[in-house]
Length: 322
Image 1 (cartoon, rainbow, N blue to C red):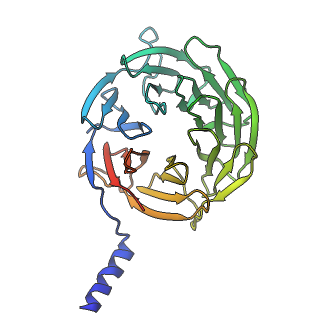
Image 2: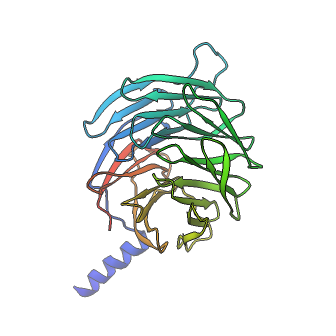
Image 3: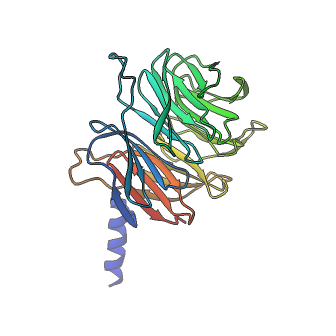
């Protein structure tokens, strides 16, 4: 009997067995380009290939809004939304296409601003006051909001692949293909801190207060920095040659970092030590043609249950990961 148990354990280890999600909910059967979860995991913003942009109330299991991105007056605008963002207070949302940005008011469900962009867009983030950050292919960053002056940040030499903004809209974090990461004063465009990684950036993320920065490149170098001093708090203990992150969020009073990858993985990290605490793998749909799955966004609800959304159109609730 003991030999059988040992054999089962060995098979599980070799196969990479992971606990399944507590619950799974499908928000679309269509192909999706991007999805974001609100800070508490109550809402989901999903960009689909053929059905526009969807706003879901996950607690009520209800599709609340069905939006179409784009300026109807412009026939040349590419309306395919490839990046999305939700403010920490869930009052505003942003949808980003290659050439335009739309900001949405969640209470009314209506657009409050449409902007044509001067260069191809790469990434978007939005604050509680609707202050929005857009990374562009020419290495510049645009900071804008309804009825406010546009500010352009200049500091990167190549495309800005990832952006993040603090909840109050005061601090902005940007990462580029040139390996540089810059922390900005979002209202003025003045640099506060700058770090240099070995390869092009895959993900940057601020905590809500803007006091901590998570930065990672495509070769698996990932760090957490103190923004006031610029000092490194920890380096994630990654024991692979390469590791790319598709999503990240500080949770549980910034004691933990939860990350998602383009290869189905969800990983919980200790922010002080950088040590991995636990791992999960999202599931594939029955009709999926790919073995991999991208974790688009992760959140933690009021009960500290982890929630994820993927390119499979699935919202998975994992419980309290320890």
